[in-house]
Length: 286
Image (cartoon, rainbow, N blue to C red; front, side, top):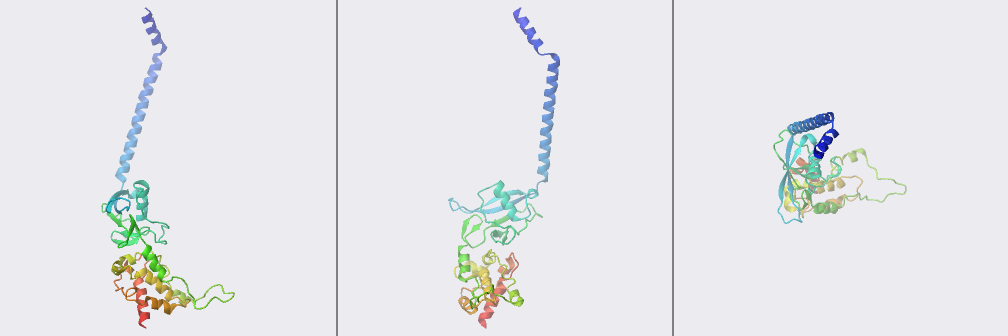
């Protein structure tokens, strides 16, 4: 008797109307959740269909790992990436592989930090557009050729900078400044002679594209350094022109240039190092 009464009391504790409302609520919640899942799946599928995947094969080498250099392949959605190669590299480093190493700074083609070999051509990653016409074709990225590699896309620029230091790239006037003199002046015509040389950003794209520099980098100064040397030879304010020319009059420093003109072809600033080298030779011949 007690069992029957207790069962009856439990039934009375939960009114049928409440049970009906709860059932409808659960049913509505389930259908709402199901609709949300379907909507999310549809959005994901739509996004996947709109993706424009481009593959980048990037040179990798870490001196701390006992492993030979290799290429790593990274997929990048071009619809969610900037237009430049540097944008893709930054996206890969931020989202896929934080160990990827490369130099970068200004992103404006001014500092020369992001110089590398892209699809077989030396250039700046920040000025090189991603080729999206044929997205299926992978873009290959290597460090500057024929230089020692520090890690991944970072070349050792030590020898290059030492060669630049050797030409003494600063103004050496014939006379000291007079009292009250603020600066060394030159005419507009003399100033115009420096155009096409002072814009060099020392990215080393030209030097590392030169076969003569590949084989004689320890002796041949290379296109970039020689153009900078001519920039000071041609400066009307400088008083060490003869000494500068005499210093360059060497079978290896200067005359390893065979006018192949790879330097001019690859310069990302559209300068002409080959012409500057020819002008140095002409001055020495006279």
